[in-house]
Length: 375
Image 1: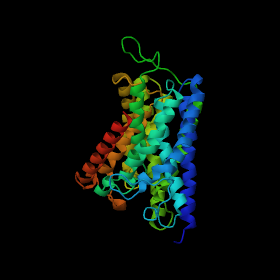
Image 2: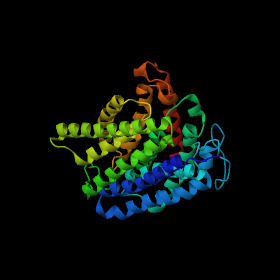
Image 3: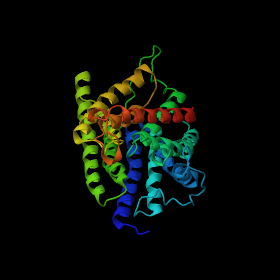
Image 4: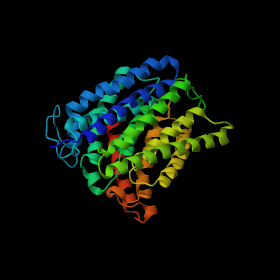
């Protein structure tokens, strides 16, 4: 096989960017929690990657990209032939490291929701299970040729496969752990426990936003032919959704609280990024802006609902950002898809309910899988 230097470099640079998201998550979660827990947060984010990497190499990649319909296959130490799933012009190991960093991102979403009251060993085991079987199996269904992808389900860069999976696992973990001491009063009223460093938290969001261009853009796994145009559009839709979501959250909190809420606005940026990730290649810039507005509303009221109604203590809003907006973004493909890249047209573009139904069915399958495995 003849390899493409351009495609290979594109995938490897993106892999490095997605890896750097670990730094963004680490300092974001550290800044939005209390100073005494900073060391624990850093170690959990570090171990997400350092445990997930060998586990994914040992068995996870085979489960995700094997040839089965329900589960890929058991291929210890990733020694099989994956030429059928490796993108044209890209060496296998470039594709392998690109997929490894995506797996680690899904696992690290969990740490923020479980912050400040998790035994380190217990967390490591929880993280291991995500990289070992939870993410690879649902990833196979979506990206590895499994039954969901065969239905026509579309999740370009991971609103469902990465973010919703991580968000649902985070919700289950937070429910199992219970709230932090002092989070709720005797009558059930929620009390804010502010983070110790908003500056550090903001830096984490800027790092994540920067890295997201690799997360979404390089999911083309090519920079030749039509992929060049597609990559440029993906950068635009990704950036638009995030920016519009941030402005939306700023306005909502300004109206409701009489001043803009910094931490919620930071979560608004991430919500917009998560929501656009599934359909960034097949929605128009206008639709990306609409998705950004929707994600802004959903992250504000979603986080409040999880905190005040469900009484689930999520210190950094990870469930609202990743779980709820991962759900939203995946569903939005069925609403706003223009029919590009072989995706069915969305409801608002004359496609009827077909693609929307496929997206909803895929979401239900993944929700059930993660819910069963993590409880």
